[in-house]
Image (cartoon, rainbow, N blue to C red; front, side, top):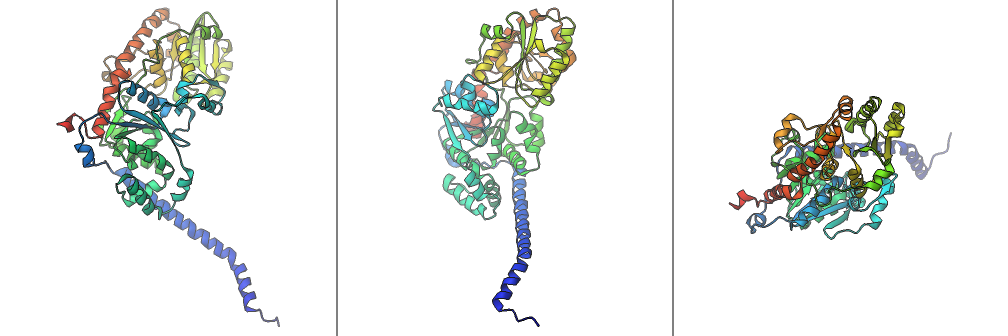
Length: 486
């Protein structure tokens, strides 16, 4: 018969035998708790996404003497906000840009230095060095995304009460438990929310629209593309907060004519206004660039495509095939200059080789905006995307340089939005590209359309022309518009 086991020995053996089972149970309980927390967070976010305006103006704002709103711009997509602020300040308006390092504004082309410092680089990572030589204006404020705060609060139900206390102490306003629980998942952006206290209103673009439901100040939303077309329709936490950002905005400024139908789907309640993209027509001006033209080949004419290589969204392959057809048809003394970056760069290079047009195509490296301005001025024709409806800042900046632009035209339904349609050389496919390049009167068309393009931008998009619309959106958000003034 085996000797009796001592009590302590028995306990040790039991612990060892049960340890894997208890560990598995602990992990299962933790997964259940995590799933429950995730479901509650999702439910809170879905409730915010379904809600409307969360901003009831406090009496202090409504009763203050009417004055120009102090405007903060957050979400510096493609440096649009940086340029807006610079232009508004030229007009004597109170505006500042808040840049979030390590968060919403991490991407190289969202860095203000990219707008100011002349640079060519081989990659986005290499281009990040541009900031070392950039002098930051006093009206640019920088905050950092806080990963420690993010980890401290996210995924924890008890964080909701802590976030409510923080918010009340910082802004003198209470958050509902559901709103606080949703904010707890995004507390890495807390320094950015604190920075918004300086302003009467904040204008949000890009991913920063997701902070709209937590903004301590009335919000103006200014979407620029996928932040309206895609993000707010996603069924994840970020997508639901983007929806809430649109629905809680007091003012919505639309820079494209097709944006309204997306806002209709989102059932927004804020006041909408067509606010064409603001262009710095003091910086983007006509000029020459003979040295660059000489480097490209000297004599002849140059078509410069100013968008990245992305066949799905930009249709670069359509341009290449149409240009190649024109060359086979007898086109002479033309070269195509492409930007050497984007998801489909290698596909474009391979297509150029397969079409046998290497000697007529120049790939230029990734560059900052001062260098891009030089390329625009060196162009006889600027080419942009041929797929999606609408046009971006590179198109408008090229037109401000008095360069004709070939791209997908605005649809007939959008034409009434403008005093006259933009004078694009309309091309959406290979056939239309081909027909433009083989037109016998192409030189005459280019000579006529270039000056018309500059004039059109000055009328429709120049900052002096459109600033009143932006300002009206902020005044409405702050409760100081003409109607409120009575």
